[in-house]
Amino acid sequence: MPSAARRTAAGGGRPRWWTELPLLAAVYLAYTAGRLLARGDVHTATGNGTALLRVERALRLTPEPALNRLFTTTPALGIPAAFAYAALHYLVTPAVLVWLWRRRPDDYRTLRSGLLIATLIGLAGFTFFPTAPPRLLDAGHGFTDSMAQYAGYGWWGGEASAPRGLGGLTNQYAAMPSLHVGWALWCGAAVWRLSPSRMARTLAVAYPVAIALVVMGTANHYLLDVLAGIAVMGVGALLARPFLRRADALRGRVPGGVVSAGCETSAGERFPRQPTRGSRSADGAAGADSEPAAAAH
Image 1: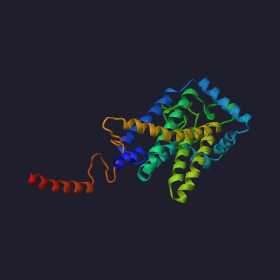
Image 2 (image 1 turned 60 degrees about the horizontal axis):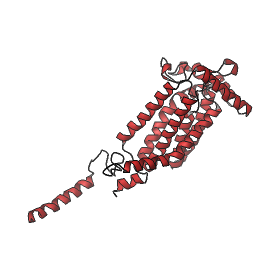
Image 3 (image 1 turned 180 degrees about the vertical axis):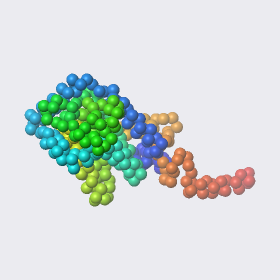
Image 4 (image 1 turned 120 degrees about the horizontal axis):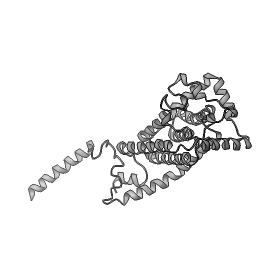
């Protein structure tokens, strides 16, 4: 079996970027479109939000009010938190994906698959359990929308992290589970597990913890949303390897046995069927050997 095929069968190797980008883009577009379609009605979403809050109060697990007061009364914390909520998941998650693809190709497919599976599970949560975040509950619950309070410092308005004037393109009732926390945990776990740098591993632990505090302090998520985001990422991680085994088995049934075609790059190859320097010399040597043989006939 060729080496690239062996790597694919074993789940290793670097997928080609021109197959990865459409895959990631398709899942993200499906996620975004699904959020918009799964808005739910305001009454149901508000009822689910207050139900989560009642459960937390019954369990005496309600850090959100204290964090929200801290963030809204301390701009030195609240303003950076607003920027973190609005931007970091769009920056850090793709950066970690690219780092894995370039530096840890043998782990990339498994980790990428876990992330995508968890994201789709999160979309199911938004669809079947629309939830109003704390900031959209009745004022009697005591929450302040810190994103709206600090909107003058950034590009967002009063509709979560959506840019001003584009609030209609987001679903404000998609609080359960918190994929802000889920994606941050995925990034932290990947870097902590695979980076040899002590500083990077320290940041890998701090990042998901900070995002969990941010989403509750900005009144965008409940503690139960945070825990659900962690659970969703765990399920994604558990399902990633079985999913890849199934996908590789199906690919292996393609006529011609093109297990690795379009999926892996061999050493030194950046584009499909691009000969490496070594392969050119080998081909040239083969050609030189074949000419005398032809002349002898």
